Image (tube, rainbow, N blue to C red; front, side):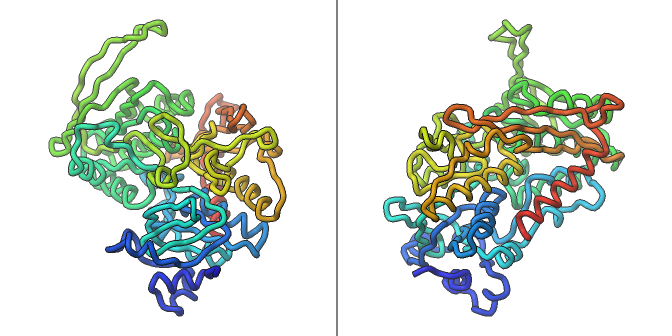
Length: 467
């Protein structure tokens, strides 16, 4: 049988009255005996989406918008939504922005848009029988959408670190690229600091929202200026790449007066969390032809550490058993054919799709990209459920598929932006970015107009996801 939103909540052990009000469960995390609970079948849905982030919420809403009769359910481990995009504005102490600005109740989206939501931890995926096993029980599907986001690859980056040291790193030097307690912890560390330097590490390889660490540096520098704190914001970048590089460098020079310091080609080797010391090896190249460089080891003291580890696709991708790329991130390999050169369908299983950070397309992993890809994925799935065909290539090229803003100043508020056009690039969706001058009159990348656009974009995105 198909289970309704209310039935999902009954199975989760809530009263019918509570279910009628909230439309979603309230428990979080894996319950004791989760594996045993996963053997109990809760029911089946046409479409099951794993992950209630930007991409997952968009797929669910768009499917119900296309056809209200579609039976759609999201499985999400958290009982509330917290946004990573725009979170740096909170660290910067911008007026009217707080942690509550970033937090939303799923019940509003569930009731408004008519899909189901089960708050549970995914414990296994049986593609042969089309069942997702969770800490609350099994959920059957016709089509599965993987939108689980990222995980940190501490073990890959620091193989000598014990599980206890990794757990401590998460507590005292949070990466804050995964929504939830990390943002609260980093906010507390930044707002409670007295003096000293803030160190932000930038990982090599693919990671969520490439401009985020650099915007974070600008916003923490803004907070330090507001509070009259001495010290610097030091960026230890494993590569020399800076997303929106010219625009950020302009802002750091004009606005921050040397407070933000970017150091290229710095490989983190260890951290002493008790002494608050980070050790890294920096490689300095003489010129473009120099492939070896000169390596020197440094140890830096810090007051606050934002240790952003190497990123990888969420372990749910491995759990699903779909083919992935051989790199450290393990992106999902996407389907391709003469009829559909690009798709959000996985190459492994025609009944399994992927959106968000994990996709194998060459597009930036951002909130706006997740919304765009979620809408296109929903169109693909809707056509399948209606017995028709749809090619994502028909929507390409698409100008301004991804518009990403970054705040760089708080007084006055100023921001920069990048605009990406998406296009067919062989078997994947490719992208081409450009960073326009926000203030052409003064030949500057940053502007107050772009700061207002940043606020408006975030408010619009939240309306899009939750109303």
